[in-house]
Length: 263
Image: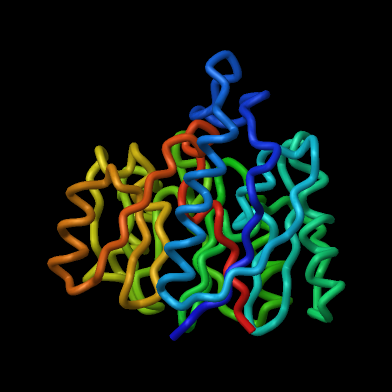
């Protein structure tokens, strides 16, 4: 089934500050390369028949390209983002305004959360990460607004500071994830919920191979995640590799650039 995605062109992309272990302002990033790679991702979605809407980038917000962090949208309800770091603070209101202007039911959050960075919507439940960015109280706030059961998972490795860097949905009922990103208790929860999950290696997790987007048949994934791609193909998925190495300098991959609008 075709999906609807919101994206933001990396017009102002740079690495000017460090708010996660991937970011090195001294090394910087090439904005033009980032734009070309982002355009390749957008083209991949459109070639698969998905709809892509765009939000205008705002000068001074280099991480606005990571649209997934801007909100969580379930059943036409938009739970807004409240960022943990002041450098990204204005992004939350900008994304919420985009949805308000188009008639969506929105909620301005009381608690810190970074949208789909830490909320992963499945068919029946929402998985929610905490430990680095999203306040666990936001999990309850999201549950009350979205009307979906929310299951909290604790992240323990700062390289995987958002849930979407360590886990993605395969088809709404199953997931792929890297166990080492989670606390022992959360690993046990994931084993119980998803006994048939795809388990990624550390090597594939370290190139943000789990920051992927699936429509249930096709999986758009970072090209460097070789072993994970082979396992997904073995499971019957069509794998679409993309190159987003420049955006990875800020800790982002395909999913970070992609906010799903669930009508």
